[in-house]
Image: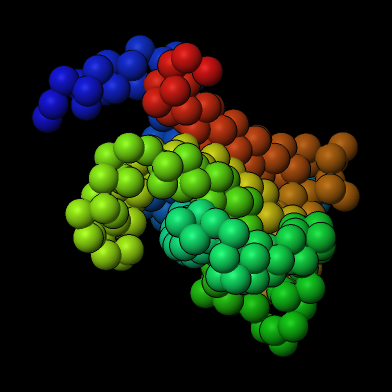
Length: 286
């Protein structure tokens, strides 16, 4: 590890946003991973014996059901943890696809600035960006008769790369004009080798920041799809659908609404803080 890497590591660890975001993300990951393991409740089975209050309403938080039961008396904690597994997996997977596609398109367009390749790629990006992101995702989501985690993952991943492509293109244009890149080109290095050796390493920190913050956007998009009924089909638990189910019980059983709302908020806040902390550490002069 060189001096620059050590300096960057120290800056990352000093950032309060990075620490706060990392704590929130780790807590959510641990909760999603361990939640179903610490409870013996079946996330798909209704507890008509101990999950109903005397008023015949969902049971509130108790020693048996730590976060209470939902509208049909299923354990809220286990379902929330399983929903977290799906949301985090889809968010991370879709971000990986979107970042890879956006980085590839952006580097090619930026390196060939002004060429036919650049013009065609950027016009495609501009046309797709004319549509609101969530509207585009919902349109693609309803095309499938029965959506699965895999279809949602690829739908989000293949529609979420546009902003990354434009930012990476601008960064690549700046890198391409640097003296050492021009010198390498003059020495006869091929374009793929120039991009791999000089553009990719210099764009990677930016991609890390963009990818981290993109996870929050993907989690929101997946939750919105589930809330509107265009996401993963029930009875598979998702945070968005749990939020939908709890909206009619905000007075009689507020925990049904609050539990998914708090987890969505915490996940989005965690990844955004982590991304902002990484950005401030990578670009301290900003």
